[in-house]
Length: 316
Image 1 (cartoon, rainbow, N blue to C red):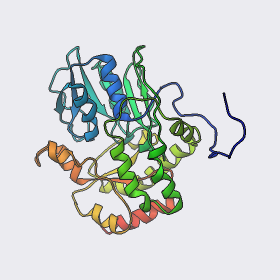
Image 2 (cartoon, one colour):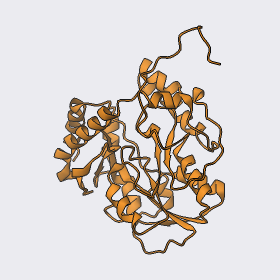
Image 3 (cartoon, rainbow, N blue to C red):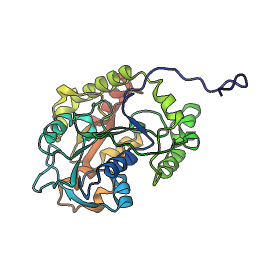
């Protein structure tokens, strides 16, 4: 029975989630585990250039795995076969590889699309696809899953109460003050059981202006691209950008990330684990060392992008 009276709770805007019809889970890695459990795959092919958390459900379930390489367009070098009880995991890098997923779906019936970096790229028909909400929005956790199966696992709902402090601190005292809590939250998300998305995360995701967020990402992305296209060693088609995660700048210099940090411009490395998985002769190793992923999300305007470019002009 619903309570009446008492103190006033946190008031959030009531709107709609971006993917109301998809399965709502607690983490992206658990969305992958959900797929692997339902489909019963015995082996997974995955790229060297991916996040180490992908290994968590694979190891948990004891599934065999094989790494594959990608070319300079970040597309799979398919020199292997994918058997009927095997699957191919492909990452929609930076939200720019939707067309590659569509092409791969015609060749590999057991394709899994990792859209953790591509929240606004809608699922391709008949392709199991998962999303990580906290990569794009200020939420403690949350994931969506488009599953090409009617089978459903019986799972409980998660609680995000103790994974919220870094978000509150970012409002009260700035993004840097909440960083330690953010790191702890990342650790707390490790090895969680598969659960439904928490009520807190759902409430937060229902109050987001997705149209504005996507517009801002596209606008900031193109603002940077107009200047950086001639300095970028990674060539891509920018005509179809759809709310990308970051602007990927590939450059021979290894000093850019350090110089940006000195100006309080924080650049994540995608992904440090790749250095352990690869040799220095491999393209993925070069990507991990030289790919500068510039922030272009909805927090920023063209003025912020101009500040970023003013720093880069002296480094390129």
